Length: 105
Image (tube, rainbow, N blue to C red; front, side, top):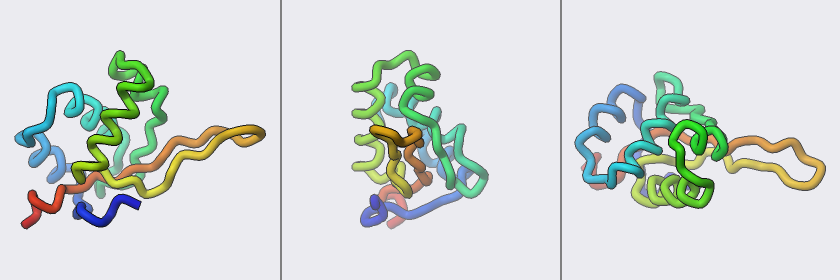
């Protein structure tokens, strides 16, 4: 998954460090929405794209782009991809909060 450049972390520590991160404000908002669905250990964040859209007021394309940027930068790790399709019940992707490699070094 996305573990190659990120370090897993607890939710409280992620929030503290992420507040000061040089991340565009809309991307930061999406990240904080996802973080509200994580448990205290920073794992099991499973908001669907639709739920993030509802919480943020953004469209699907924008939400997907911000999630992708957060994964690419190391602030979120994808631990299980979402599934769905013909005949399958949709399931949201699962994320873990993480620090980019530059934050941990």
